[in-house]
Every structure is written in structure tokens, then in C-alpha cells.
Image 1 (cartoon, rainbow, N blue to C red):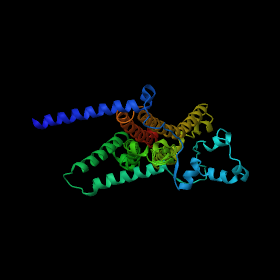
Image 2 (image 1 turned 180 degrees about the vertical axis):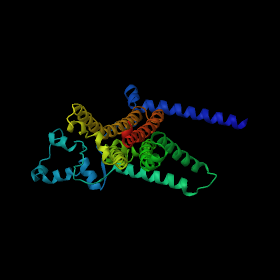
Image 3 (image 1 turned 90 degrees about the vertical axis):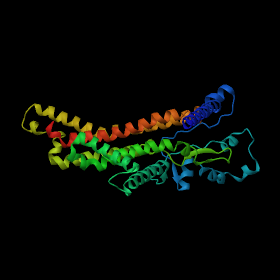
Image 4 (image 1 turned 30 degrees about the horizontal axis):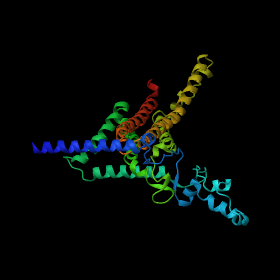
Length: 348
């Protein structure tokens, strides 16, 4: 059929173009530029673990170190203006010194690039589900079917762990955690070409050097995984106390046998201490599991883009999409498991 032949020609042309881009990316990438002496297409990327402020501009400039230079220039004595330093002197080298990123202080407040990413993720999630439920029908369309399928999948997953009744109560918080982690990871991947090229920096139009990205994945900021871990922790403890009452604390403070003079009470106290430590350690494990995986994924994508630009990073995207889904499932799934252990503790 002509349509089939045309489709094959289009696919063949696309394959040739991708192969050409792959070869060109290898030649102008970091590896090819060293092998063939070609000019490097991208500057060496800089990965900053602390979030970088982007608003207000004064906070961003102070964080990047730009606001210090005018102040230093004013403090120089007038004699220096009459006797400028030689071209190879130390003072001249100081003028050319690179700006280094300085993390924000504890008392400082600014809008960071990771916070913008979290806001963008929240807006996308709200729009996705509001638009999916805006025109509800008995015979759903494609978009409504996708939204309903996602909801049913998460609810079925929660029901298999908690049971139907408790799953309905826990669903709003667990689903919010799942979708936020998932959408944040996937949006970060799709925005790689944008957020890696837009931000604050120095230089002119052709020699612009990016110092701070305007948007950076929120999962690479340890504050966001920590916030989700705290929400999950408080959520589990709340339902444990609500379902079991003060009896929920028996697994942490088991002093009954010890007060009765039984030697086994020492074992109960020791086990209770271990239970309390394991409960608190969940905050740390939740935080650094998500933070480590998201940060490692971003570094991998950025470095592959630097080494072989254009299309080589497409192969990494598929892996990172899977990693984002797995992290969302793990975070929500462990919250459900710990919740099940909390509300059914007396049964075990």
C-alpha cells in the first residue's frame, strides 16, 4: 500500500537523521572534541546540590557572588587607580576570578529553582485531573479514560494493602504523594532541554555562561524529599493513634512486664526501643532514597548530554522514566505498608 511505503520512507528518513545527529553529537561532544580537536558544543556542566535562589534577583546575585565585586571595587584605595596592576600581577588575576556559588543562609528567604519546579509540578497535576474530570460522561472519552484508569490503579493498589475501607480513607494523601513524585520526575526529564539552557549567568549573547538554572527538578533538592517523608511519617502516626488510641504507643513503651517484675520485661523494653528507632529512621530512608535516585538521574542525563549532545540522551530518558515510576510506587507503597502495620499492629 502507498501509505505503508510512505510510512517506511518516513521512518527510514527519521532513522538517518537520528544517526547523523548521533555522529555529529559524538564529534562535537566532550569525547569527540578531545579525539578530533573539534570545538566543543556545550560548556562543562556544573551540578550544585544546594538549591539556587532565582528571585529576588538580589538574592540570586548574592548567592552567585556577583554582588561582592562592586563593593570590593569601591573599597580599593584611589592610589590603585593611578598605578594599575601589571597584566600578570595577582590583582589582575583576582579580577578574572570565577564566581563561586554560595549556599543560602538558614535565615534567608528566596524563591529557588527547585521551588519553581515544585510549583510547576503542582499546577500540571491540578490541570491534568481537573481537565480530565471537567466533562464527565457515562461513556468516557480518551482523556477521561486515562484519568479514571490511573485513579483505579492507585486505589486498587491501596486496597490490596489496606483493605477497601481503610484504602478509601488513606487514598487522598497516598495518591497525592504518588502523583507528585511521578509528575515531578517526568516533568524534569521533559524540561531538560529548557531548564539546562535558561537561567542566570554571565557573558554576552555568544559567550553566555550559565551559573544558575531557572528551573531544576525538585527531587534533587533534599528539602522536597524530606518534606514528603515527614508528611508520610505524620500521616502513618496519625492513623495509628486514631485507630488504636493510646494503645498504639505500647509497641514503643512496653514497660508492663518490667513493672510486674518479670525478667522478660527487659526484652520488651529493648524491642520497644528498636521499634522507636526504626520508626524514626524511616524519615531518613525515605528522604535519601528519593533524593539519591533523582539526583543521580539528573546528573546522568546532564553528563550524557555533555559527552554526546543531541540524541544520545534519548536512550537515558527511557531508563529515567522507569526510575521515576518506580520511585513513586516505592514511596507510596512503603507509606501504605507502614500504615497497614500501624493500624493492624495488635493483630501481628
